Length: 318
Image: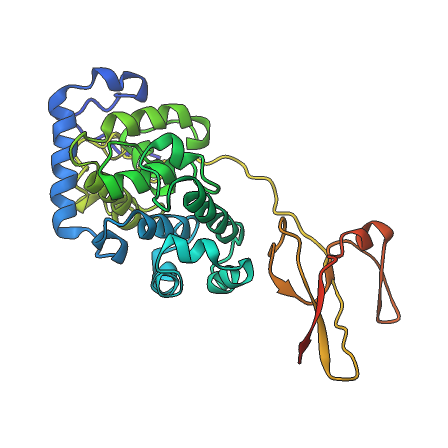
C-alpha cells in the first residue's frame, strides 16, 4: 500500500524534537504564539470561569474539569458558587453538604479534597488562594497542571500546563513517537518553553481549547488548525497515529453485596461509606465489596468483608 507523501513546509523542520526545544528559532516561537492567540481571540470558547479573575472560582472550575467534560461541568459550577460563594463558606460547611452539591459529577475524592483545601486556605492563608506555585501545589487535590492552570488564569503567571488535551496537541506538534505517559518530562519541558511571559493566561486557555475543539483525538480538524504549518505530525501525515497509545490493564470488576434493611416504622438503614474508596464519604444503603456466597436468595458475607462495613449508621424515612 502506498504511503501518503509527507507535506513539506518552510516554517518548520518536521524532525524537530522536544530535546531540541532550546534551539528552536525565535521566529518559530513567535509564530506559535501569534497564530494561536490570534485564533483564540475569535474562536475561543466563552466560559464563565474565563470571565473572572477570582482565584477561588477558577480553582473550583479547574477541579471540576478534571476528567469531566465542559458541558457537564457548566451547571454544577454555577450551582456550586451559589451554594458556596466564597472559600470561607466552603470551609465551614459539613462534608455531607459538600458531597451533596457534588452529587452526579463523580470522582468524589475531588469534592473531599476541595473541602480540605478550603479549610487549609482559611486556616493557613487568611482565606486567600495562595499565589505561589509551591503553596498552591501543596493543597489537597492540586497537582502541577492544576496549579499552573489556576495561577496562570487568575494571576497571569507564566506557568505551564499539561492536561490530556495539551498532551495530545504537543505530541502532534513534534510528532512524538512514544506514548505521552512515557515522555512526561519532555512534554513538561516543551510546555514550559512554549508558555509566553506576558500572555500566559490566554495562551494556556487557547492551548486547551485547541485540543478540545480542533486537535481532537479521532478527527482532528487540521485544515483549520492555527498550528497546521508548524505541526510535525500534520506534515508527516501521521496525525491520526499520534499520540501513540500503550496497552492498558483490564478494568477491575468487583462483586458488591447490598443489604436493604428496614424497621417497623418504615425506615431504611443507611450508612456513611469510608472516606477512601468507591463513593467515599457518601451516604447509602450498606454494601460490601467481597461477596463470599449467595445461597437461598440470602447474602452471606465473609469475615474479612464484615470488617469493611462502615461503623456509622442512621435510619432514614423511606
